Structure formats: C-alpha cells, structure tokens
Image (cartoon, helix red, strand yellow):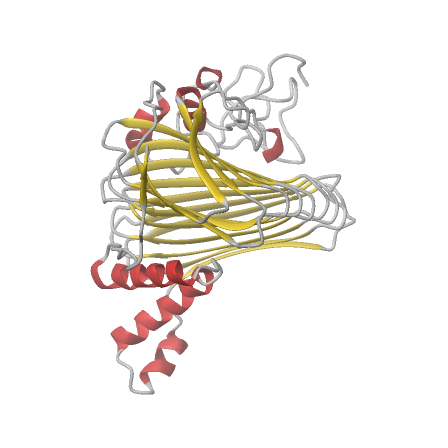
Amino acid sequence: MSSTTPPHIDQPIEPAATTQHGAGAHSDGGWDAPDKTIPVQTRSERFQSGDVEAFPTVTGREVNWKFAPLAKLQPLLDGGLDGSAYPFLARQSDGADVEWGRSDDPRVGTAGLPEDRAAAAAWSARDAVLAVTVKATEAHEFITITRSDFGTQPRAAHTVITAEPHAQGIVVLDNRGTALLSENVEIVVQDGARLTVVSLQDWDDDAVHVSTHFAEVGRDAFLKHVVVSLGGDVIRVNPSTHLGAQGADTEMYGVYFADAGQYIEQQVYVNHDAPNTRGRVNYKGALQGQGAHTVWIGDVLIGRAGDGTDSYEQNRNLVLTDGTRADSIPNLEIETGNIEGAGHASATGRFDDEQLFYLQSRGISEEEARRLVVLGFLVEVIQKIGAPELEERLIAAVEQELAEGRSVIAEPADAAAEATA
C-alpha cells in the first residue's frame, strides 16, 4: 500500500497486481492505469474527504456512479453550490430543538465524511448547518421538518441530527416542491438512545435530489432509518450506518415507487464494527411506466471486531408494466467467523398470478386485485415507521401513484407548523 494520499474509488490500491482472488479486469475503473492495478473493492476502504477537489471528475465508469444519469446530475458535481440557509417549516415537541448553526459547527463530521464527489461538493459549499437535537426526556419526541423552497438553482444543504443519551424520538425530513439539491445528513445516536429518522421524497416531477446520510450508533443504541421516495425526476439517497459500539442496533427500511422516466437510486451500507451488533435492511419498490428505473445497492461489512454480529439485508422489486428496469445488487463481506448470522437476498418480478387468481375468484375485479397486491407489498415496510399519521399519508400516496402515476400526499389536518428561518 502506498503511504501517500489514500486512493479514490476508481484508483488502484495495489502497485503491481493484475488479479485479486481470481478476479480480472472489469468496468469499475482503474484498469486503464499504466500498471494495470486493482481498484478499491472493499467498501470500508473507499476514499473519504470533505473537499470536492480531492475527488476526480465523475465519468460514469465508477462502481458507485455507473447507473446514474450523469447529464442531469452534472450541476451538482461541478461544485460552487449555494449552501446558504433556506426556509423550512418545523413542527416539534418540547423536548426537541431545531436551529441554524454556523458552517464550522463542531458537530459536523461526527458521523462520517463524503465518499463521492456529489457529497463532497455539498460539504464544501455549506454556509449554514441545520442542527436537530432530540433530548432525553420521559416523552417520545416528534419533529417534522418540511422543506419546499429550494428553487431551481444548484443548492447544497447540511443537517446534523443528534439523539442525546437515552433519548427517544422520531425525526421526519419531508421534501416537496422543486429542487436541484445535493445534501449531507449526519445522524448521531448516542449511548442508549432510540431514534427513528424518516426521509420523505415527494418532490415535483422536475426535481433532482442527491442525498448522503451518515449515521453513527452508540453503545446499546438503536436507529431506525426509513427512506421513502415517490416524487421527483432523479432521486439518489445513499444511507450508511456505522455500528461502532457494542450492542449497537439498526433497522434500515426503504419504500419507492418509480413512474415513467423516473430514476430512483439507493446505496445502503451497514458497517458492523463492534461486538454483538445487529442490522436489518429491507427495501421494497414498485415500477410502472416506460423508462422507470430503480437501483438498489446494499453493502454489509462485518469487520474483524464484529464478533456476535446478527445481520440480514434484502431488496424486493415489483414490476407493474413493461419498459421498466430494476437493478438490485446485494453485497456481503465477512471478516470474522464468530457471528450469530448473516445473509442477503434480492428479487425482482411481476404480480403473483396465484394471488390475483385467489382475489378474482372471490369476486374482486382484476384492477382492484392488482391494487390490493401492490398495497400489501409496500405497506409491510410503511408500517415499520411507527407514526400512524405519517403511515396513513404514505399509504394514500401509494394509492395515488397507482391511480394517476404520480404521488400526491395530502397535508395532515392538524399540521400546525411554525415558520423557522
């Protein structure tokens, strides 16, 4: 290994080898170097930096960019984004704080650092940090932050969510309107805390949104992370969770519905880096319409310190019409054999004909039968959120997707929101 600057994702890490574990050249980049060396393949070894100029220009050959529509994302990769404060609406309980912090807030960087150029561009451009704190009270705190005024110019955002030791609560980031946005969301769950974070993408049809979530889970702490992607043109939400303390626990869920011409991508990473940690990943999506494209890449690493790990990840895709594409790639790395269990699964398919036949045989029309099958498929994950009001809104949104091909999420009747600047 070189003792100089750490390698980038598409750069070699071994100075003389041409194969590794029997692997030959592939399309992930780095093989056109003069010495024909091997690109970084282990997720934990990816180069990390908050400096956009430390990353090379994205070509589309990189393993983490090879599916993305780069032409639409290019304004967010060039740097020079507007990272100033933006308007939002906040609804919060007494045991929670939402406030703007300075760009040099000491909490920045406590959960992770960017692994790609888009995240680094947003990191470099931040002029303000939205700090969300869930305090340790006897109540289960609830915070909803609605963002709908980003506009059409390239923007950057940075959010730090902190759950204090033994705190309990749920934080919802509700994204609407139009946007050309790259953002970083840091999540710190301190010892003994239990936190749910929901990222809801219900953008207008022209929105382009790239988001990287970094989570650090403390000793005997629990994080439930939920990504719901419905509206927008290009949506790319990549959450990673580092279980770096004994007994850390995470459940990572995702629900997405891609319409004609829509691109939705999720790259999920769970790093078991301490004894007796637990991880569950379950993402489900539906696709309908010509050109609908979804990408799910799930990386799980059980490190050498991960004795007693219990981990499982899965992705399921339901194809509703012709002309769609679902890419699903689960990856599992294990560096210790002393674990409770680990596994991964992936499947993409059409309706189960037996389910449809069963429903139709009981007098239910084919159209209604299909609706019930899709709802049953996705609602399983939606109901994991643990917030009944929000779950009802999302179920209504899925029904609207089925009826009209796009999402319309109704405002809750009692949404008493405070304007915060």
